[in-house]
Length: 219
Image 1 (cartoon, one colour):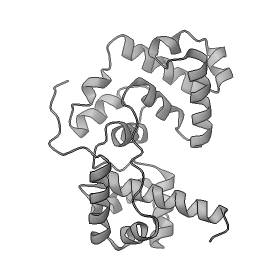
Image 2 (tube, helix red, strand yellow):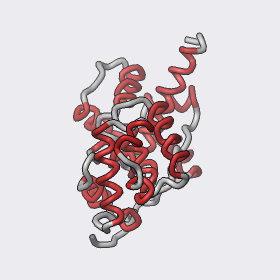
Image 3 (cartoon, one colour):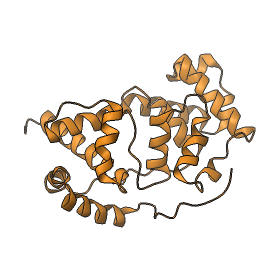
Image 4 (spheres, one colour):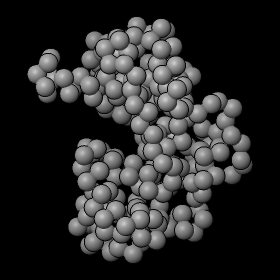
């Protein structure tokens, strides 16, 4: 792996606010989100093994159930590390909440880190495409998982997670258009370049805020 940092600036709270305003001026749908709900959270995560493992746990399940599983793991081994995960048997991981498939993914990730087959610190210095390709060499890390890691842990500014159903649902409600499939939505998202990561945060913010208002009886 070569070490070349992307020339683009990474996101932080101040830049997120600035870009939200810019997207709201450029896109009428983003203007609605910004006016109604304001700036979204940065939703940043600490780069490294524990965060990547948690994102793997979040695949195709609710964030609440993934968080509960991750917290049980944290309580079981104190520090979520490759060595700590490998100390647990399959039976112990199942009791924590790992499926058979995610147990295999967790073991593969742990072994890859310990054996030096993946260097998560070095990935932070790679351009987007190279970083994504390195992550996807891992068993269980596909488009969505690698995109979420790049967006939240590495704070890359121009990532639109592929296949995120909450983003598709938010766009459907916001635009009134039919709910898009994954590739179609990636095409729609090109209008928000080079700040697709900010657009994703705004759409998540819209999705969660509107759902909260509905639950509260305000819609």
